[in-house]
Image (cartoon, rainbow, N blue to C red; front, side, top):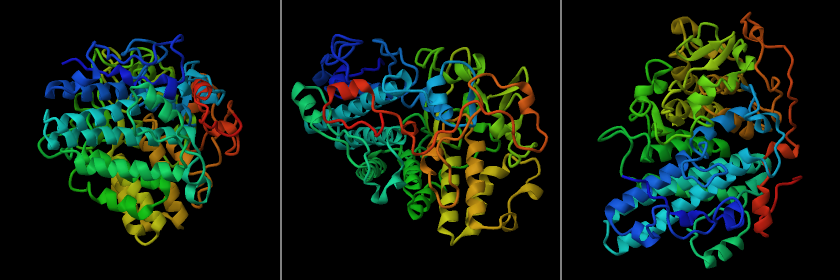
Length: 521
């Protein structure tokens, strides 16, 4: 069944900011298959295709092209991983492909950050049009309310997580001001497909970060309530939004907010539904990407629907070797030399002595799923929350060990105990280090850098210094029990520097007079 993408969602006059004379038509009210918006919600099969179109937008996006499948995986496909990795220090950009992101040399016109915003808001508008179209279809009796609620829940899930993802790049973290009263985003809840709606949405200004979090959590709560599948009962569901995916994301959002009790409350809901795979590579075995016991939400790819040679994860990380593991994390003494996540040909691929991830292996058909959230993250979110609450340190260490122990050569002797730590801070720091190791090459490092600024127990100061934008020397990867102490070619970026957050794209500023730019840009 063809994915029907309602092209009226391309409200670039509003959220993309391009004129109809530039890179693409901006307000084309006919969808790509010449099916009007009203027709797209006229039958159950067309409604199902429209929902598939929303997932396609999350999977592929667009990248300076008029082709619907011409994108590079913005915002939840490959770009989610690649941009998150290259904003941090634990992966190295080896060529020029992600250089602006890696070095912090971007501006308001740089394609990588522009299209994060552009495709993020395109996806959000697709979600809003889906919600409105389904509500109309239910009112007309085209589908039942139960079926409609499921679609609406899925759309609200994608709307919530996309706003949250954009917040982590285009706004300061929650704790930047008391009460998170600083600028967040415009939280879009209206499907734009008329000139009047464009004008109305133009009038809206950026909400505070606190207001955005409130809406994100409300959408995720609605998603949990409305979606039919819990992701497990009746068959494994990973490539679509589920109740469990909404719950898992709430642990991530509450962690960023510093609401530790709710991280634990939400995480406990998943204890009987998910489990870690026996081996750390379990979620990445190609045949099991979408069927293993650990993956909660991933973006599915196929030979004909993927981000292509210039975006797909296996292309960039394995075939073209454009992003390597950094000696900074590879040489970290806290990452035991015998850890199974170092296993050659399983988790790691070595080329000319340089270490690359082997999590993405299909460099022929480019079908590796993009891991968005796994149960391992839920466990570590809960571990950190318990450690920060300080009332159940044994429970925090137990949760940490659940993730870490499966990768140890000798868990009986190498597992953490209470005696392993001298303070609460050391437990939290161990959890953060475990996140860096466990989620290496999954785009998660930037999220932690962002939220841990000024933290009281495990602070990160700005964007840490990195190796130079180039292929690291093989000698830098030799393990000798000491941390990497070689040259760092990219200087740290202070938290106060304007580059800590991406600028709102200039095309948006040019066309939306009410859109405030980030400070300093």
